[in-house]
Amino acid sequence: MSASMPPLPADPARYYRLGAPYAGWWRRVLASILDGLIPFIPTFALGAVLHATGLIDRGSENLWAVLIFASIVTWHPLYFGLTMSRPGPRNGQTWAKQWLRIRVVRGDRRPLGGWYSVLREVLVKWALLGACAIVSLIDSVWPLWDDRKQALHDKIVSTFVVRA
Image 1: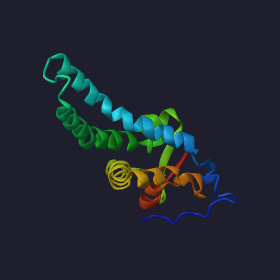
Image 2: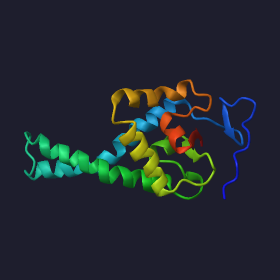
Image 3: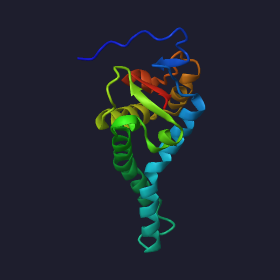
């Protein structure tokens, strides 16, 4: 049974809980960009090996499309599921979020698990909201005017991004 969330301090636009300030918009955007690129590293490495061995030539865009799709459905869920579900103080942090000293916390204060992280990052943020460019853009800029600095995907899954 989860405990209800205590009221926010007097300045809700600045603090989440126990004095942890909400993460700034630029840190969130940079972490999102890096987190989008990091899982592609194995795909590009595989593509480079295939290209070096002659299995992919310069004109095989279809094979690159298959590799990129395979990366999205394999490496992205693994990356987010494994990095964000780490125990202790690294819970809620991908490598990019860790470098930028921010983390994702659940509204009910339970630790982020692997499946919850995949739900937030891959299914809601990328598949649902990322399917349409304008919706993705609105999701990205939403924290600029939200009093709790939440993006639309945060609101859907009840998460907050705070400074770590």
